Image 1 (cartoon, one colour):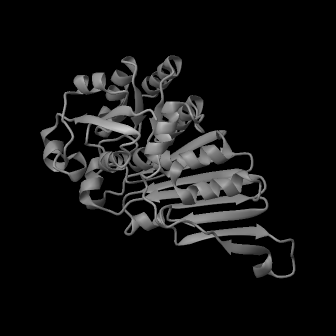
Image 2 (tube, rainbow, N blue to C red):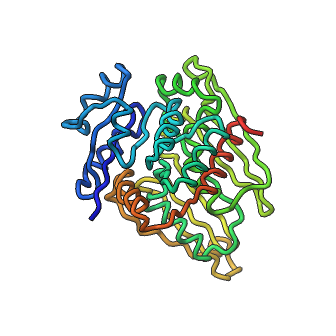
Length: 330
């Protein structure tokens, strides 16, 4: 079995630790060469974490030269520069998100990777989530009939630190969270006819970033709603996905270890309002971690064992819709 040499560029991304922990569980697939980080702040805050024990800290250029593939886990504003350097030097990458406010830059990186036959594996962690995959399975089986619209939300609990962080980005919560759930809508509905961003600054805790935002995606069959927030108490419990079709509806909430998880299908009865549908509770696994499936999926992509479900054209469309939802692109 081929083993790939990989390293991690940056430890400042919110998912850097989780990915390193997950990849270290697969020594049969990956040799961890090292990691790079120049920020004293992040070295002090995360450099001593157990997931980096025994791993060499190298300069970025040296790390790239020694690896077959890189995990790009820098702070969000630095992701694209690191990705560009890796692709220019012929390296495969796992690229965390969001992938920059410059659409042309992102598209150029993916097109160049495609020309060179390089893998760009995006950090949309809910693509491997069992509950979300079950919703896709049901919807794409035809059980719901034609999909009419999707409603989805991703929120975070309110904290001063995070509200201050959001001031950094033009799209605020939509920029940070929106890609995950726009992904659901794009896969299930395709590209919309129109995108309407609705961005708000509540002024919570005295900060002025966009801390709650909604995007409306217009289709012939209805309007799909994408909602994000960083000012909800208990926000993690309001991460929801509802898919409405002509023959039924499926709903999960929250995405990870859902407590709401039902499928309702029309049964043809018309005699009682509360008996029009047969409702069942979905059977879903409970003992998984959000990062579990990423290493093996990345490995299969590197080995050419699987065609990407999400091709480069899809990934480009997704990022375009994200930037439109943030009001960055028209």
